[in-house]
Image (cartoon, rainbow, N blue to C red; front, top):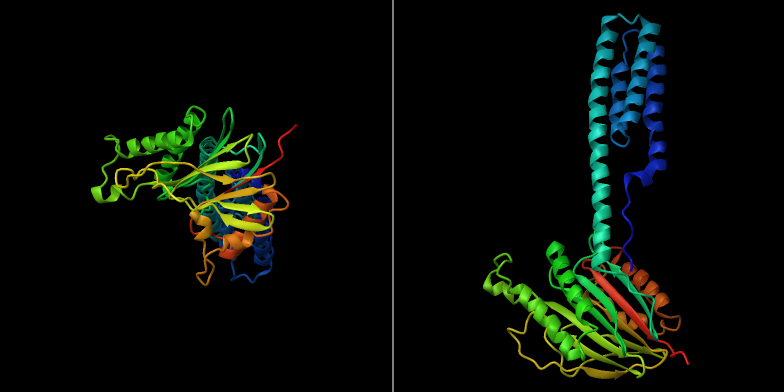
Length: 373
């Protein structure tokens, strides 16, 4: 899973030490030039820039030290040029002290806000990792790799989701995409993931599991305690999902596709979409579309890789508006395993969109390995 740890202000200590050279150099330059300048020229007022600049990147102690250094420099200039009791230099010193005090207060407030932001990011990262747990690299006879790319630069999870659960006879995999963005989409994703993890090992067959997931999503949409939603908008709240059941002792996978992009089967350099003959509607739409859920079986042999993905991958556009050709880009790239495949796809996808996605994107690659004898 891709999400990383939050970066706080402490991690940028070295760059900030380098920035400290700027106000110190400014103080030194103004002091020397002011001492050498003609009597009618006074550059002391420029010294106020030193503590003001320092407050923008350093803490209150460093800002206080730079302010004190500026006051000392102004005192040296006053003593060399005239005297410390000279009216002009006296006002310059008072002004410098007052502005340094304001800069000190600003630095203290900024540092406190940075600490709070770092703490919030840490809490958010922990919560995100609880919602979207990293998939294990090995489950039974399966090797698994996953990647999540959030569209928002400060986010690590959105409406895309995936999960895996071990059963007595095999492994069940879920990938989904919640319509919408923001905290509401994250809440819907957490609801579906919790329902899947709780029921995947209890439901005997795949249709029963998907029926349970559908009931969970639909009951949440009908919750009277939820915010009022216009009737015409209720049909727009749904989750597309693909649910797979991969038995340990059979070279097959069973799939129920609820309005999700079809998985791709990679076998000996060939790419085949796993199109179901009777796709189910997205979760949350059974009120509008009636269907009988049935799982369809596809061959899944040793060495095969099944690639699951969300529409953020295939709908990613380049500058010319061309969609990302996923099936073309994975052809012949599965010989080194799931991890290498997703590493390649991640780099290639970001290169295609110029480094920034317009929507969240998730991918899961599953390879069947020979069962241990």
